[in-house]
Amino acid sequence: MVYRYCEKECFPMNGKRMYELLEKMNYVRVGGTEEEKKTAELLQAECASFGLEAKIEEFEIEDGELGECYFEVTEPYQKSYEMRAYKRCASVEAEAEILYVEDALPANLRNAKDKILFINGGLGYDKYETFLKTGAKCIVMGSGSALDRVEDTDIRFGMFRSQMTEKFENRLSALNVRTKDLFEMLVKGAKKAKVKIESKDTTSTSRNVVAYIKGTEKPEEVIALTAHYDSVPDSPGIYDNAAGSAILMELARYFVANPPRYTLCLIWTGSEERGLLGSKAFVKDHEEELKNIQLAVNFDLAGNIAGHEFSIVTGPEELKGYLEVQAKEKGWAVSVSQDTYSSDGLPFADNGIPAVSIGRFGAPDMSFIHDRRDQIQFVSADAMEITAVRALDFVDRMDKAVMMPFERTMPDNMKTKIDEYFRRNKK
Image 1 (tube, rainbow, N blue to C red):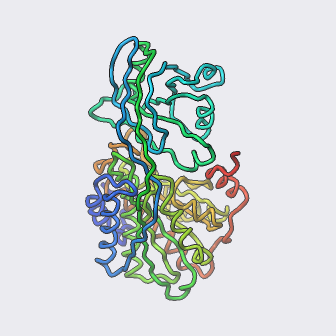
Image 2 (image 1 turned 90 degrees about the horizontal axis):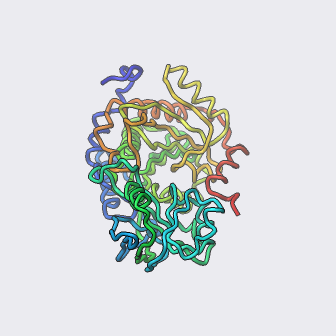
Image 3 (image 1 turned 90 degrees about the vertical axis):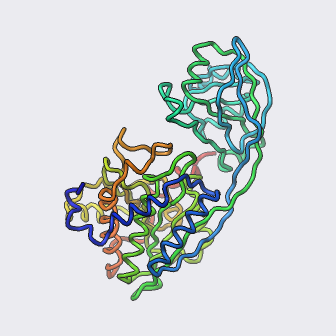
């Protein structure tokens, strides 16, 4: 398949080679695991194959271990249900009454103390404190759809991050079951259950892969290029984000062969799916370098055969305008917006560095994210070339600019949105 505007322009960006890298990365790569380490070494070796030295930079991340865990309804019938406890939650062993609290409005929670609570939806930051105050024994959530087939789906993974728990003396106990099982329990009128969760806090080692291509004319000024290479549990993470990692690798090849004027810092980040931990570690460990970084360009989500192109600017309005003009000049169909984007550009933007995320959103029901269905058959070399060509054109334009066509500043509206994202406005 050849896409309309890519036919004559994709020569510098080799879709076949990018796809071959996807095939090498076609396995689960959770941050802090041996599989993530294996992938970091793979990316380092790939860089070395075309003469680029890359270093693996380790950093510590919070993690957790689970021991014996179970959930069993005991009244008015007896049945054990498959479950997945949250890592870093409170350990619990109890038999208690079940209370379905729907959307957890105040009236729903009047009698929640010492109960096992069934809730609609997930457990976000806003609800965490609310449930903690109830004194509930455990929170039970549904994962997936009531129509899911067991053989095709996994129970959602959950872990409480320190940003959610650190200001409280105690923690919640929480677990996920299949939504179809939660629905069955509601239909059958489950009244009482036994629950056990053995939870232990641990730490793990994650890794960034970092390479520099020194600029020929402005080596002291830097453009950072990022893509995360980890995946969520149970998913090979092809669309999110092996494809973005492959695009970054192809850009690295191009600029090794065509030396840039500005220095390029290329970062394949680890543990993005665990809270942007790789990019946070980079900006912390390279604090002195940040003053030299003029722009961060991030690649997260790409390659879906069915989808549409996007560019999201966390920075000045004129940078958004520049990307809109680029798309019009080229005749490219691209959605351009000024906003935050939950990916590795944000820690740079949080340090005042304009950030652009370039990628391709998958079409509904023809692409899948954060589950086992994010697989290679939904991605193509041609579709990756669309995003890769746009990425190269933009980075090359920035590199050839006598002066950056925007101010290195973060406008107030974006500062507000960044604070909201990192929840600094929450008491």
